[in-house]
Image 1 (spheres, one colour):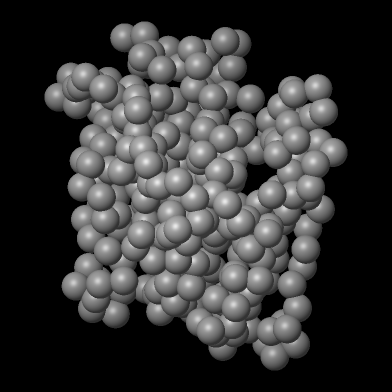
Image 2 (tube, helix red, strand yellow):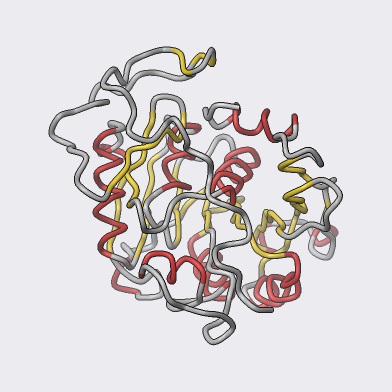
Length: 301
């Protein structure tokens, strides 16, 4: 499969939300009431917007720092955070693998206000942006951002386990497409530091009893996920195909995986396949269900 210009799902439309007005506390945006509490540090002058960056809405009053010409959060990230927190709503500890600028983790932190987070990212520039976002959103006390390769034992504390592990892995092996562009976007698309098998292996090693691993991956590469899960002794408990435009074939799948040893034997060889989630209708408008998903993660419908 030749790699496309970006991950299969397009970046989330932040039009009219980029470079927001000074009043970050405004309770409404285009007749949409922002849900959730207002972080005490929102709009903190000590978290400046620097040249080449934008500050965009992501969940309720939460915002995220992104590079104008680098990797920007996408529908893939929104879906991963929504799916993981939907099927593990009582998580106390959460791990975000290959966390990038923090989009998956920030959304999950908004949905799980009582949970503690560890995120691991290998690109220093992405970690810098994620730390700015965590500070802006008042998350620093429960949101640890580590710089490193999650395959490296040095990034882990002794016997760390998590109720919920999430990941939006790169989709394409090196050499399957043009790898030019900003380093952030290249690492997002291509398997420079690990692949779906590495994500599954590390997730399996870090799952607490009854914990789940939620991820997203292309439908065309479903077999890779199945093989990676088997090798890591994980069971794909459920998956949901994602159709980007009504009438098309599903390009993505969302997955919930659990350790086989945490399940009754009768559950270890079956997967519940849900009806597809449609992102846009045939006429281009956002599908009503996806509008509801966006509302559920505190994003304008």
